[in-house]
Length: 109
Image 1: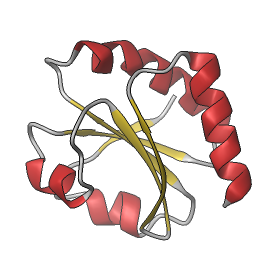
Image 2: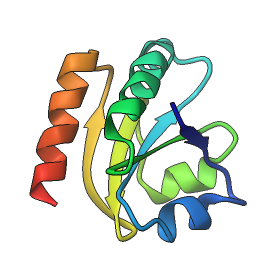
Image 3: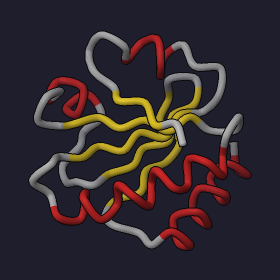
């Protein structure tokens, strides 16, 4: 499972210049639902290899990036293609529910 940890230094390379869509998990270590979402997010990354890049962004360490995306609550997952937001998923989701939502979004883009 490959989940990239984003920061100011690698954001453009991993998101802006990505040739495949990217799903970004905006999270914080003190957030209970974020801690529950983490293992689900990481497990699903294996199922979308080559179709979708999985990345995490800590909102405490990167408040400017979180602000640019208008993050108001966490966990928030944002799917980005060609550096444009395609869709967002707010709150904890089970593995099955999250996979279904991601599949649905990918079919639209």
